[in-house]
Image 1 (tube, rainbow, N blue to C red):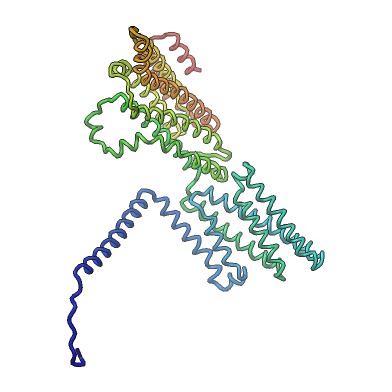
Image 2 (cartoon, rainbow, N blue to C red; image 1 turned 90 degrees about the vertical axis):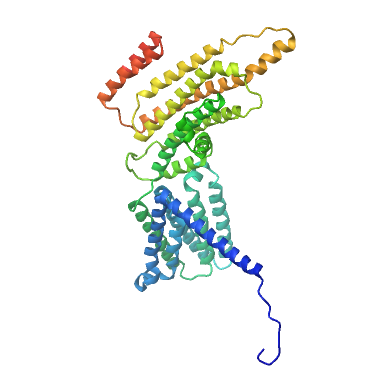
Length: 474
């Protein structure tokens, strides 16, 4: 030691060094993992990146009212309200941004006007009655506005505006009791809110707009395809259909994703209703005209969920402990696979119709083929032999145990076909209401010939063929 003394030298523990390096490695690995996930998300969803850029651009523009002295003097010390407005109302879709902007402006202006009027009446009543009048007005209007938020029609479109009304009215009336220049204060806040909402609307509509209507339309198309894949895969699993070599090469995770696609349909109710609400605020864009039948999309979504419930029940039959004998499965394998294939074809054709926004001529014929497949299934069901009854338990217990699992599957498939038919009718009605484009005349004539030929080959009933032929010609 410097003072001439001595002290034993302590060597640092190797365990502590390893522990430090372990923590540093973990931190860096988590950071790299996060950056990798962020990069993949940005590549897969570039719209999200553009939305982030738009938010940053809007905040940069509105911040000039705070940084630049002439603009700051024009709006007074309330320039920060414009920044807060942008942060609150700028949403991912243009419809959501418009909805929030209109609600905020309407709620602010209405509450500001009423607040100033109530403040004037209270000041004219004298200093004794002024706080009483202000308190009673706050109670009545807050009660009324809050109650209006429980009304379904107002809650769906003006819930945010009612909340802003309550907030603004309370700020004006309560702060007005101590503030002398209330009118100037209210004018500055209204001006900053108008500036913030204007910037949000312009940037949201002009720079890479994300339309809620388009997102809802694509969601319906994707859900239809997911239903088709889930249905076909579920029936294949139940009857243990051997897959081709190409199918075996497919990633197992992708196969499970397709089989569980119906779960996305079951969980999409809130998203569909929200998007339909925001789409009603949007101007005409692309193939979506003003007053597009967005409510019909909600009806279509409800029918899709009813189909998804049937597929969920079918999926439950695959994992049942009591399974039908292999003899019965072999007897119904072909007709059930044919029916599931026809149902999947109808769903895929409906998805294609939605994507192209055209009136399909194939849907009616595919629905007819689906109904013929149901009839074939019922005819096969009648061919089940009745087992001889040696005893009461054998005659009642054993046949029921053998037939019940396959009967449940057949019942679910039959119910699913009726729900798919209702879904096809709803989408046809949507095509009429939304004025989808018609098929070209040449394609229509070509399709009629091919369609009739296919029907006559697959179904020998000439009367049904004539009925379908006359329907398509009409």
